[in-house]
Amino acid sequence: MSAMGAPALLSTLGLDVRIGACQVCKGFEWSASAGECWGILGRNGTGKTTLLHTLAGLHQPSAGHVCVAGADMAGLPRREVARRVGLLPQEHSDPFPGDVLSTVLAGRHPHLRPWQWETATDVGIARAALARVDLDGLGDRRINSLSGGERRRVGIATLLAQAPDVYLLDEPLNHLDPHHQIAALDLLRQECRQADSTVVMSLHDVNLAARYCDRILFLFGDGETAAGEATQMLTSEYLEQLFAHPMEAIHGGTTTVFMPR
Image (cartoon, rainbow, N blue to C red; front, top):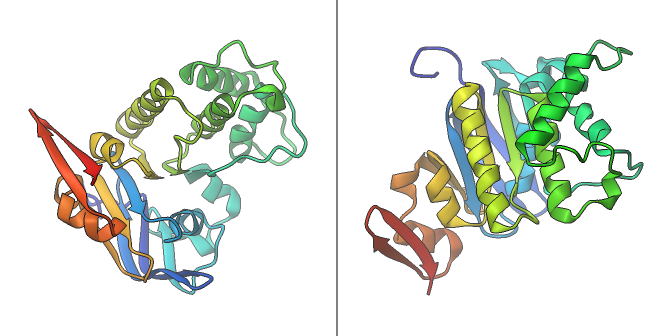
């Protein structure tokens, strides 16, 4: 439950998730509430993508439940789930590439009735989302003509147009240069705070996780997990255990940076 007594936007009950030989989590009890920004950290192959797909309802858990605002996701219509939970996958596939605006408009489909065409309002929302990721004016470009970073920002714009309560992002900084990495994380944190949504994202950059995430979830790859406030989780000792590599904390003023030794 949230601090105000409302159900968490997303939660798990006794969740067991496995992919191949990897036990992602076992008996996982977790919740994310409005205004929270979560970072998922772990070594390669510990199941960060699989967990995000499970939370989005795309991967069947071995046991347990994923709940959306207190309701079991398995019992909700997929359209309702899509209105509440949005996923940015790690990579994009465009087998039938269209233009940029049409791609972003796909984010509005959960809000439309069956066979309903997008309205002028939907188009306005999509164009505003493109502007927020610094791609205004590119709506008529073919999606397969974009660079990797531009395509990534289109993916983020599509999620913004969807406007879910829960943003699940799998390595959202893929292909982005430092300027657009910071711009994207600023945007996601703003969305989290102002829209009363929650952001859950897998990251590889510990220092960006420290800068933007309120709470951190560790995946160890053997079914064990650990979660808590970022200030408690992000220590050199804890990170060394997570990544199986020596980490050094470098303190400078109010900022601490973690570097591998």
